[in-house]
View: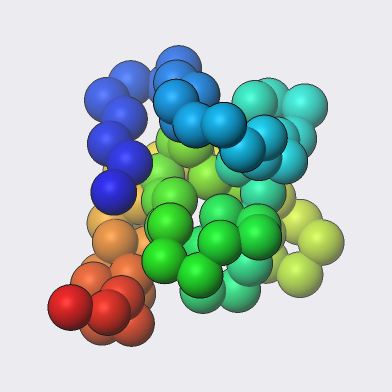
Length: 76
């Protein structure tokens, strides 16, 4: 789980390097998983959420919707 409050993206402390966009948001797949991971999700300000090729602004509404989706699809 990754939590962020505000708009500053904090890096994951890991030996792995994750792909970030130009705003330092994690690149995710259609299921909000960080690229290259199967059970590491990112939503809200830390995630590059796209509608097709168009970025969705990091708002509370998009984070809430993303969080609901991840809660339904995440294991455990």
